[in-house]
Image (cartoon, rainbow, N blue to C red):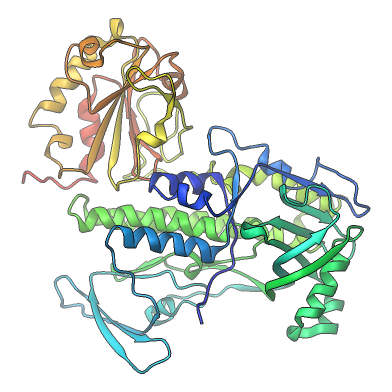
Length: 530
């Protein structure tokens, strides 16, 4: 029988990442788009100063200003279909049995034994790396001996997916919450395929009554009570669960330079802020471009160390927030707030507001490292996600997003913002000369490792003619200078911005400082000319 995770919501930053690997359109064909939320108090009155609208209100700096509710089993199928379209064979129906490492092997250090589910057939696979993206009970993590000691809580939640009928207003708006006196902050999510998810907290008294063997009928009966004063009728149930919340982060994300953990294998938490599938995608995108670049010979192997350096602190912050979310949703008051005199519902509203940027993924920031170097131009901070901006093709009347022009091919993007050409042409000529020289690392790197894009201020009849020389990669127009100012460059100076493959800002420099771009890439790119 197929086994699936049950996560169901993707946030804007995750959707941006999926868009840049050409998956978003397929996801949008299946999922339910949610742009707003409604919150009801215990008497069924709207109180939108609380609830998830606090999060929706902070979707700035992106044109993907919505959430997508799509259950993980459909996400997995879409990703598998995309891989197979690219002629990648996905082995389904096999499970890891064991693996070992050969320290003396020059390249293929990993020997993994896999078995066909439901039979005694086994295979041994040799590989350079093994990635454990195998969930909270990760076998890869256990076989690798990576310590993982999550905290067990007393919070227990119920989730039910199915076809439901209700008189709740706006029940298909995307996300609703009900401030129940008896069942905590009740979750109501409109899902794909006409399904709905209802979720509620199980009080200690209820748990003593039902135990771990709560039946489907008992879960449905409590769900009906949880959404009071609204009605609820179940036409069918796809799935239900009762689970105890565990919270923790693995002590290591990588070990022996070839064993890598991602997703729930290295962090586990409640579904309170719907972070699981999103954090897993962020992990996957982060390690995939780095590992892919190393395997292609583009990047130095040292770059793989930045995966744990960047992603583990994010998981630790997620767990810190989740301890508050899970307590407040269960109508508990964390010790930090017990003297505040505020209710769990008010504290939850404050938490949603304060953590919205992190939850949406738009405010996630990575610390300075070899990938994120303090910028020498502009106003944006290295390690942050730059706001998306609109540009125009030559002759175009319909704008195109910068993120669409910088897909995640695993390569870096060097953006050259020209500023006003009358003021910057001389500096641009210096940069052109440097890029064309044998000194330039972008010229000596492996083909495909670095791409360039020229963003010309204003609209011109012909870009190269306006520049006076060949543009840096393809050129696009910034008619009102909005992209220029968003990145913090002046029209008199212009500037250079380096985007990592995952879209985060790596570095920025003045137009005539091409050597500084080389210095940035020196710790990342392999010299293909050597």
